Image (cartoon, rainbow, N blue to C red; front, side):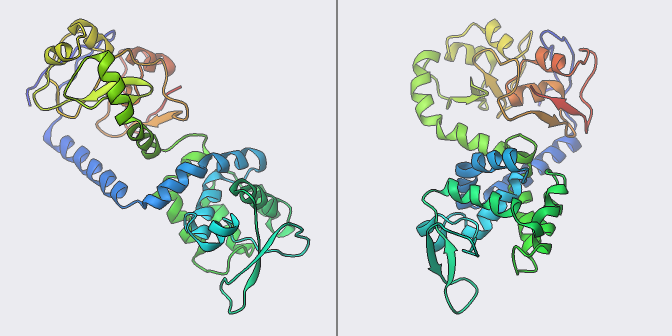
Length: 329
């Protein structure tokens, strides 16, 4: 890789290529993220994508962490695949108990004899009843004094209150939450891998439609933050991409906050339209990782570099430091 200086528009800062040790670190992080992504259960991902909004709604109304609600739903219903959840829409294993006047179903749980469980017409009713079940019982009352973003205290608190007999119940909940980054929902955000799945789901449809308007090219077309973009190939240059998509090279550079052409590293995201003033809904902040700079972060979220500086009240002469929390909206 050539050691090239890059002038950013409108910032006109100069960055040099990373040294080998930094590239190794970034590669290691990338490998770890890829490994984790490959080992995530598809059924869990589908469940989270389908019901995360319900969990967030319940948090807003009852102050129960969305991560806890989702993790319990995943664990108790086997990601919506258990017999009880499929036949009765009961995603939390809630039994009839005294005072239940709704529909009932008898199902074998941990006991030899079938137990009485609540049956719902819709999954949303199960989520609502789960919240009411916790909020209306005295032995769960102490949970609502906890920080609604402290999923670990909530996990251990549920076990202490007797929600489940399994001694490993809180550990299982915490592992699910951390493996699938569910705590992001507690903070009002979204998780990156769901955003990626959504982008991938529309890729084929968007690619066929967008190639007509953006020019016939050899790259798959994506939308990041609702902006058309591609991932660069080995032989790509700004000149070749400008020709491929019938965009003036100067305009293409402006779309990517550059004032002059430079070599493109394969895999780099290249925008074919103007980036947005802020990140997509749900992406509220970014914690700067080692090796990242303002330009790379702006490209990652599809935000204009100038706006990223303004959002954070930073002068153009100031760079991003590891551990810094940047506003994205």
